[in-house]
Figure 1 (cartoon, rainbow, N blue to C red):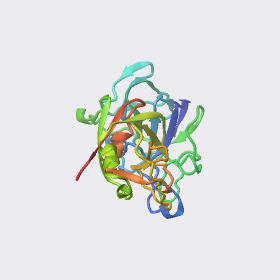
Figure 2: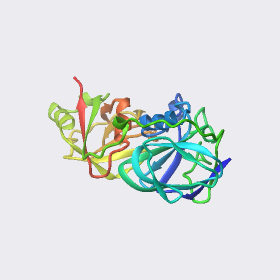
Figure 3: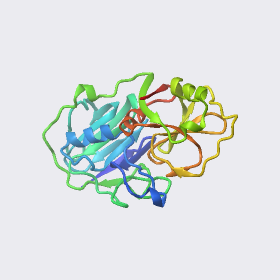
Figure 4: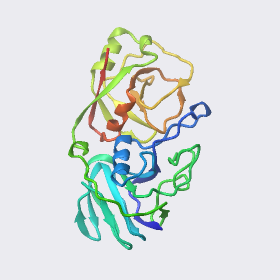
Length: 288
């Protein structure tokens, strides 16, 4: 009861909703970057919302199913094929034993989530099957999938088809408005710098992964040396580096850091950030 990976894509890992309560031990949350989409995919095949899924980043995967089962794809939109014929992922897809499913081309977004009815049998650590690449923990042997891997399904089955709501499909846009709140060290900056930080646009650089996004913008004023003790870091923390640029912590980020946190993104906005592409702009809308 397995699938065989024929093409593994740029970065494909097993993720669920993450592991919690381990930050004091230096173990990050991990989990699906776009948790909304992961839960949609699981819902479409009747899984629990925390069931493990495949997080497919940038380049799609191709696999051969050795068993009949149903799958669902949510998040980034891909052109997909089933046994060489184009198939819509707007609803649950049904595979037969020997079927080949291919995510041919990315259309919108960055990360897609592939759920299998009945779930995926993966290695759990601290109550979660999420892959933490930096520590080689969880998921499939603690690493990204590779060509030739055989992934075991827990209880493969075919389920009733469900339609993906149109409003939940990822639409391509160049500017992203993200809700945030002032960070713990915001008062260490002068009023002009705070106004700049909350008002300007940030461009996502090419340095963007599960650990964090390096953003580029007009540098913030750091002429006055700001030194803080290393303190807790949660996903969505916008840290200001000594050169005035910023790093946005994401799901696999270290659990503590020494850069001042000028703002914190609301946790329900992280799914939106997961689909931002290199070169696109992010505006932080800070509620007062």
